[in-house]
Image (tube, one colour):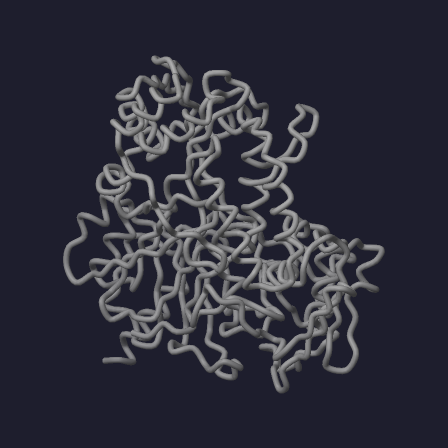
Length: 527
């Protein structure tokens, strides 16, 4: 009977996936996931920049250093067993683990690391900017990244510490590929790019066994993985675009996990299903353009923090989607500040405005993306602020319209969200606590510049100092201090951190979903 069921399952996954496929149950050693995967453009680590491709890359490839399933908040050893940093010389020397092999059976060599990092720079595809921050160019990367024996020496050029460099090297494009295998599939000088967008050449806990765009991803366990073999033999991700179909497949037992259910569907789940919630890196905030005179007084900034109905929103329409978080770096990572001192208190807000001599009413336009839950959030803010005489005229628009207005600094108040490009606190500190040149001509992709907030000089200096600080503990303390300062006195009111709910069968355990798609791990899953 087990053989017949497994044969039926194998036949089903060999066909294009459709919502009418009916399976008695999923095999005990295979995790089957229903997920919308049509965002994938590329799966080559040098090109992959989408949410779902991030999940794939993390499970198939390793990096010198990496965040891992056991604790996604801690930067740990990956292919490098140890490293020595020389901040004065701006170099880090990594010693590779012994005995690690790629899925092909080829040994992981220092030359593979050099090839992989240089390949990203030379191809110069979408995520290359993460590595070029280190001062690497196609012309100099062969001198900046070198190998000798089983060691790799990384040189960098910039006013930042080795702690920052390590987080850059833990990012997706720093994944290490098998040079011999990749270059055997080079075509027209593409360094194997076309082949790697349909295949894999990694050393990670899983090997890519099959990929059909917008249809299926199949990963097979790597029994020789240096941290131990995964607990399931395979992971199959079925493309199921409709959330309602995902719900049906989960409740009928045809899949083990549904990853794109709406809050209403989560609330309406029936049967033997469990839901786990994972904090995400995106923070949601309300900000005030300092070109608008009525929004310039610091008393308005302070009062605003008491006019947000944080709990009212997270207990109702944001339930399961967001949690209260009032600092710019997301909870769950080194350097986060997780205190939430502000609550909805209209009387306190009124007193702050009165003590400062602020005349009300204040009439302000509020730009918002015309989609849920943003419009619902805007309406809640509108109701809360009106209680203290601050009247929001909500202006809904497409994402492109809202972002364009924000970049042009032509808004008054703005409701938006922000996520880091890679998991180093500087990525958000620069966005929320740094703006040394507030002129219109000095365009910056930061919330500070876009809100025309001329950040105090001491805060700008602290951001620069934190970037260069070599001691990681002290560096984290500096970022906590910066978050406190922005939280207490800035025209940016950080309100929430996004959350992600995943529904799964009750026998599924060990799934880890960190704050970004790069931190999704299947290695510890059992069922």
